[in-house]
Image: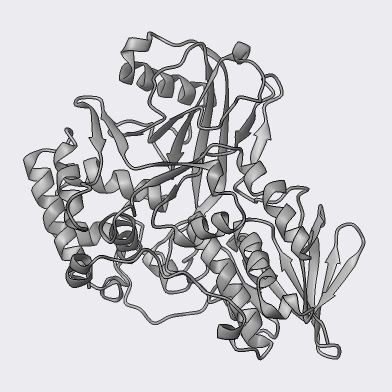
Length: 484
């Protein structure tokens, strides 16, 4: 008998689940049907775009980047022939108002994790004391297991391991706020270790930055759906699921859609954002775990959202030839200049496109948009004086209040598994217990985990179905010996 699987949610997690299921032998044999439903008329979820009406440009809501350590995402894109839509960079440029520009490029000659030593030395805004403290903390972090960091915040660990406020502001906050969406006072040190070890120290090319050069709506929209449709995956776009009920008699989940239609399926993969799926199944997101939390943690409400703001600027000139810059000591956190190939877009009559990204709540969170934009452009003019003072042709500020979930210590131990206690119900999404923070990688892994849960529920050996959850970049001989 053919089993029906409905994936609710067309973001990266839902797409990953559908893609993984479509590669199984059960799907190929016709033993399983897969349909993906999404309330929007386009897939991609938060990895989406909008068309600016005046310029005709397709612009991403917020700039997304992947790193070399994001093997599940990169492999997923490679399988669908979409990795060519990303540009890989092996180095980063940092800017500090008092110290100018620095190049961060891991050594191609030294084995990981020693390959980072010269990179730290090249960051001009770091003092000798900063570098000594950072190297000492990284060594201790490599020798500390992630399980030993559960329950503590990044700030607590950094203070206990000799990181003064200056070092925290110039190095740790720059990386952790960008990667985790919140300040060290609120994020889990276990999550911070994941970023630092897997994202930088563990393997060569782990810190490579992959930037989309095509709109996200294209990559995770038609280009992603087309090969899945060819395999036999069905898509129901513009269909919002308003009700989800288990029928014991039929052994199916019944779904009521906004269009008036309905669906029935033996298995449902719920791949909506965590704050949406929690409204339907709060008990799956509020399991009480006996952990000794610090007094700074709000364990009564362990799940909370953290915003990300994308500031879209059309200026009368190009500010720099650099494709992107990490900004330190400024309100601006990341700067990108026309990351999307605009060869087939409208002319630049409306200005040259730039984007600034600010993660989490910040000093300008409550400012009027005009004041925020004015301050950001002032910082950019100061950083790139050779371009002259730019004039703003137009701007747009897009803030997603639920962009990522805050990875607090309380959250880390309450993130649910893909397999649930409900019959035929499987969870996907970046807040699932993947071990990753709120990233495209975490979303991609969660989709694979949900697909694996479906196959296991069907009573089929996963190893015979062709499902493999990536284990990350392979660590070299030295890294395997130094990192616990």
